[in-house]
Length: 132
Image 1: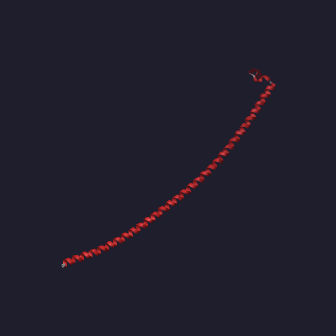
Image 2: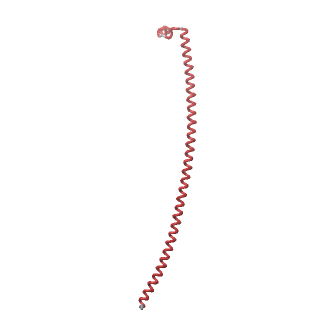
Image 3: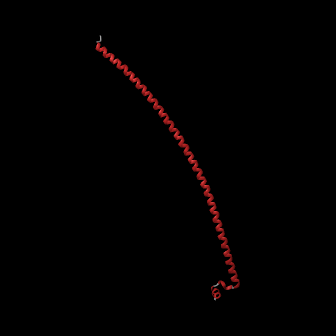
């Protein structure tokens, strides 16, 4: 049979085994709790990441939409400004050409009048004689 000291050792080992099992069970419970918390945290982080992606996507869409509208407005304004500038330039050129036509008409009339009064006025000799 077993001696008293051996029985004591067996009971100590059994009690150690029982306490170890309790400690292990507590550790496993703690690890399960930690794993659950980590799963919840990872899920929250993934949800936040998805929401941030959606928000950034919407913000980019709005920015692009606004930029397109601005470019369209600037294009329309540019076309209007160019049209007005062309109108002003055409009007000014028309005025200058009208004045030039008047000057040419006056010059032609003067030349015609001069020729009718002095037929040789077109030659150098006639001009020299006329001056003298």
